[in-house]
Every structure is written in C-alpha cells, then in structure tokens.
Length: 298
Image 1 (tube, helix red, strand yellow):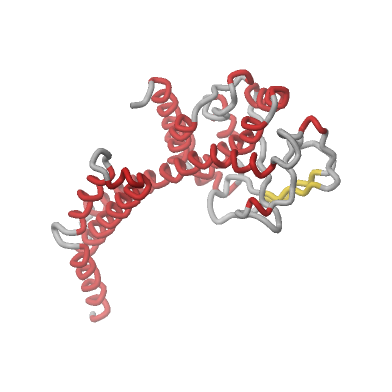
Image 2: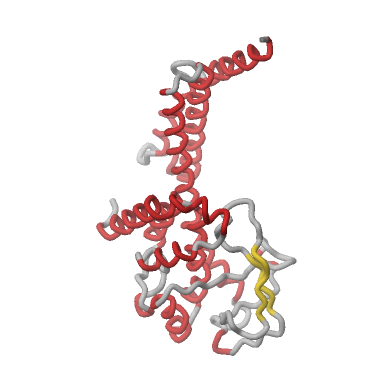
C-alpha cells in the first residue's frame, strides 16, 4: 500500500500530466524542447527526486520516482524523458561524488531548474559500455572546448533532446574526478541500475495511455454501429494482449510467478478464457477474414 507521501506525489504527477502535458504534447513533439513544462515540473517538486537531503533534495527512493515517472509518461514520454534526463545526469554524482561535489552541483539543481546531461555513447561503443574509452568526470557546460552538436531527429520522443557532445582539448580540474581514475565503468553501471526502473515505469505509463485511448475509440466505434468485423477485432486483440501481459508478468516474477502465493499465476490462468469464450481467437480471425474476402468478391 502506498504511503500518504507517495499518494500525494502520484496525484500531483497525474494532475500535471492530464491538465498540463497532454494538451500541449503534440505541439512540443513538432517544435522541440518543452522548457515551460520542465520548469513547471521543477516547481511542483516532480524533478530531481533522487537528490540527497543534505543538498536540498527529497532523497526519494526508486519506487517513489517510478510512481511519478509513470504518471508523467502517461501524458507524453518525450516530456518524461526530458524531465528524467536530469536523474541520469545526476546519478553518477549521487552514487560516487564526494560531499563537496554533491553540494556544488546537486545543490544548484535543488535551488533552480537547471539541467544536466549524461554523456556515455561513443562512436565505437554504445550499448557495450565496457568498450568505452572515455574517462568519467563532472564537466561544466561552459568549459572551453565543449562543442554541442545538432539536435537529432529521433523516430519518437521528439521533444526530448538528443545531441552529440564533442570534447576537444577540454581541461577538467582534478576535483571533478569521481572516486578515482579507472572507476568510470563501475560508476556508469551503478547509475544505470538506479535509473532503469523509472524507464520501465515510463513504458508502463505509455502502455496505460494506449490502452485507455484504445478503449475509448473502441467504445465510440461500437456506439457508432460498426460491422461485426470491428467487434471481432476488438475481442481478438484484447484477448491476445491480456494473455501476453499476464504471461510477461509471470516471467518477471520468476519462480514466484509459478507460486500461488503471488497474483501473477492466477492472472495468467484467468486470462486464457478471453481467447476462448464468445468465439475463440481463431473464430474472430475467420470473421475478419470472411468480411475482407467478401469485399473483394463484390
């Protein structure tokens, strides 16, 4: 059960997503970085939740952050990524920075809506983080030698900002080294361990939004008197999705997913009937195929 504080964060994020993000999400998808929404999220206390208390932050746990991220992603995952990018950029300093580094950089982000970036992908290494050649430092954005590349036009989440950063003869003071020389890989992996769960929560938020939009559209189509093929499509699709999600839930639970002490196995058992009663999934596909073949015969 959620604590009162968690419920409050969830409600605030949900209200923000539905009332302020959704109405302008399409606009920022076309025009770019959602600065006003980022500032608003900071004002509402929905950003920088991981920052320690001694730096002016809330020191929220991963689950708390997931609750917020899921709700914001419901509104727009591009906005969610833009906001949560700060958590990824901050995490190496949180897990490996000394007190002076934390107060200098994390403290500033608690006082005003500043952004930070996490540079990890290289021309010769991306997902293979162990193949990185660069060394990890904290680098101020206005340091001489830093060149910010063009905004990449991504397939999705276009209002978030993806750019290449070039470090040409950049001089970094020794006090900006995290832990010590040679610890970069360990820090990178530690940061990802903390930020991957909120990414998963963002995917859940998008899935919930897609499901809600689907249900609304399906209800509208039914009320509008669509043909039997549409009803068959709805049942076949929904039944298959229910079984897929339930099966995935069992997989995520691991051994506990096979144990009746946990809810996943019951959900999987209960889901199967949705591919059977009131016409099996195969029957629904026959109805759909018959309708389309009939159109060509005509």
